[in-house]
Image (cartoon, rainbow, N blue to C red; front, side, top):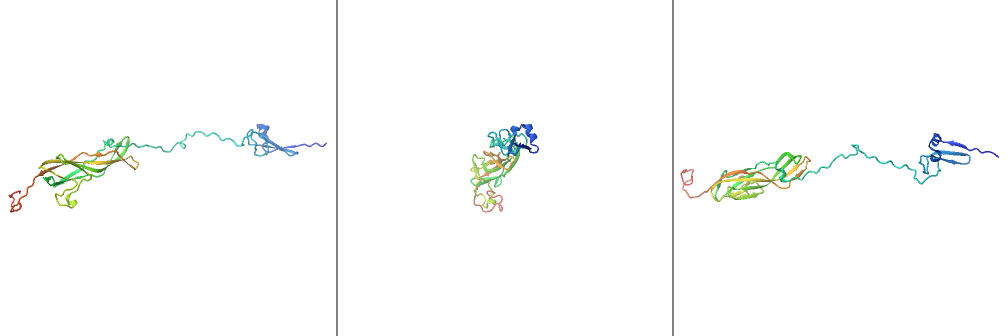
Length: 248
């Protein structure tokens, strides 16, 4: 009877690993009847595959290492790079510290009026920008004139969308009725006044104008008018020819 001795072949660096970790748990073996090949796998106990061997029995695992649990990130790279700021809504009542300038006001004929004939009142205003603090922000407020309230001083008033213009600029004769003129019914001295109605918008430094709810009205500017009564008559000479004549 001949004695067959099977030779044991170990892969380089594997045998020691199998001995240290436990041959039965981490190593696999195959044989062809003449030699035994031992390979160290990379699977955990119960896995069926290995990096070198073909066989091996184990549990029903997939042979992949489960992913490590994600760690909570608390660095600046994980934090949001921006924040959302909600700007407040602004009403006309919030603009009490922002006071638009007084309008200009004059009339034709200058300082005078004639009973029963139009006295032309002319007011002026323009877009105004004002800077200052508002509701905890540094802002710019824009006032845009949209209406003019004329108080004629005789108990009557009128609101227009324009401040008016002179007769010459309108290209009409003197004493022509205009959108801002008024006819006084009796002689006397009157103090006419005008207030400007503004719509407002606020810029919080974002470059965008946010409309303000409500309207802002300026303080009144005044213009004094002396209204006289004029009578006409047929005369022989003009006042230049006879300064002492009737009506001169």
